[in-house]
Image (cartoon, rainbow, N blue to C red; front, side):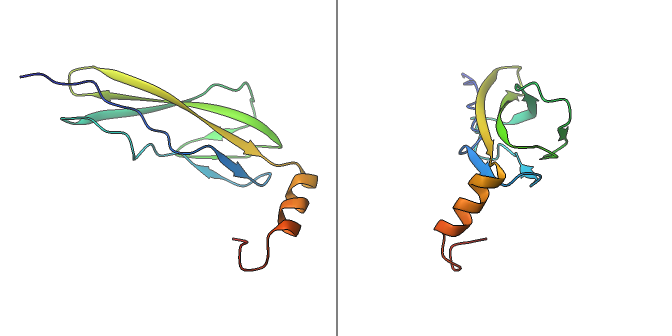
Length: 104
């Protein structure tokens, strides 16, 4: 009986407003038996980010995060997701482009 390695899936890249929190969860990752751990690592050097399950306190810029999932026999897989935090100008432009029914 074989146990295949897990497949890490961090979801789609995200675009957010400055100072908006980002939830990273990796729930779309899968394994044929069981995923034992989800390990997130911030790959972008930005010392002010506060990273728990929710990443917050990011300023305008592009940030890369890595998700590693490990199964019950130690097999692992990694993937990356990018979060783009808009500048104030980009935020204003996005709000102007979206109608009132399209804004969150």
